[in-house]
Structure formats: C-alpha cells, structure tokens
Length: 167
Length: 119
Image 1 (cartoon, each protein chain N blue to C red):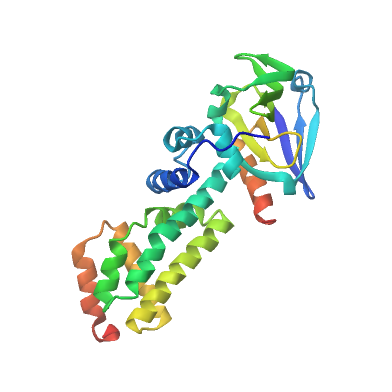
Image 2: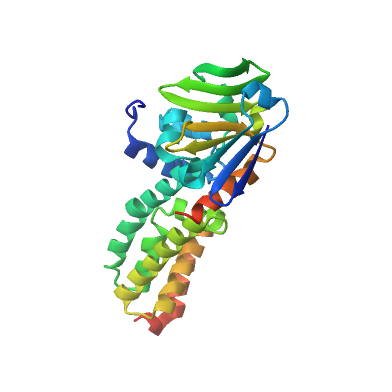
C-alpha cells in the first residue's frame, strides 16, 4: 500500500539541516518543514516517523557532510593556528545548536554530538602530536571562538600564549 | 481529548468523555515496538484528511474517528488543533494517530523517551 515517495529524500534532509541549523529544533514547526522541504505532511511522517526522527537524520547528515570533511582537512593542519582556523571557518551550525539545545534532553543526540567532538579532538591530537587533553582544549577554544563571533585576535593570542606547547 | 500513558511495553491511549462517542472508540493499545515517534503538530488540522468512516467531522467543532487517505487509515480525535499531537505507527491498523492532549510537548517527551530506551 501507500504511494511511492514523491520527493527527493536526500534533498529534503539537506534542507532540514539548513532549517534546524538556522532556527534550532524548537524553532522549526512541522508546518515549516512541510513548506521548506517540499514534502507532504503524510510522507514526512511515513518516512521519518516524527520531527525528532527527521532531526536525527539531519544531524547525522550534517556530521557526514560537514564535520567529516573537517576531520580530513584537520589531518593536514601544520600547527595550532591552522587547526583553530579550520574549525572556526567550518559550517558547524547544527552541531553547535544540537550541543546546546538537544544533547542535554535527548540521549541519542548527546551520543552523536559527543562522538563528533571526540573525533575533532582526535584529529587535532593526531595532526599536531599533542595530548588528547590539549586537543580537547583546542577544540573547546575553537568552538568558543565561533560562539563569540569569531574575533581574529582571540585565536592569534591563544596560539601565541600556547607557545612552545604545540611546536 | 486523549489521555496517553506508557504501560509496560505498550502505549495506551484513552479517549475521554463525549469524544468517545464521536470517535466510536474508547481506547487503543499499541506495542511500543510499533510506535515510530510522536510530534507536536498544531498545523495538521488544516490538512486534507481524506474520507471519514466511521466517525464524525464537524468542521470547526470536532474531527474524530477513522479517516482514509492515500491507502492509509488515520485515527483522529481533535477539537483544539493547538493541542494536536501526531503518533506515527508501524504494522498497525492505523498508520497514524492524531490526538488532542492536554500538554503536547510533555506527551511527546514521554513517548520519545520511552522509545529511546528501546532503540
């Protein structure tokens, strides 16, 4: 039974990444999803089960499309300054919102966010040859810099202050 | 209006008061394994609902009973669309339940957290 899905699921999920990344989970209604994704309400429920089901799919898509490539470029970072620059210039909108808004109240989101950030830490540790803790601190600083509106001087000052710690 | 609770491995929906009469149904029990998710959706009442049989549809007053659309059966019990909740099912008589509950957000949290433990 049921009609064939009359929409491009791939495109719809990508549009959901943009929507959730821009307006947060609670800021997006099913009406918003229906009008922005080009999906009928019934198809949306049939395909994703719920708004939360779509959100999880979108988050995983964001991690695969936007965070995964960051890990690859981080592998080539020559120093802390380069690593910070790569993170602060990446599109991490949905990841950051997920960490703040959904991870504290949604176990499955928390698992995804934790794994993604751990992977960034690991990429930095491997590329710069620093300890896992220092890599975590660098990731945390980079995310903080994004949240502060990406002031250039902050990253520069941090790297200068780190000095010999990171070659 | 519907009351929703989790009883063991089941989701139990109790239709309250006169709605029972309009919807021709007093309660529904669905195994959690057949519940795909729950969503707050005040906008759904404005959508085409398909063909009603059996039940009642007095536009602007109550949408209650079984509706058929695109080969799917959807159960409705909504008077106040601002409190509408959608529960998507799998392998059940109904593809979807559209219910009015007192606190849609709390009900979604209740259902989704019961599901998270199982997946």
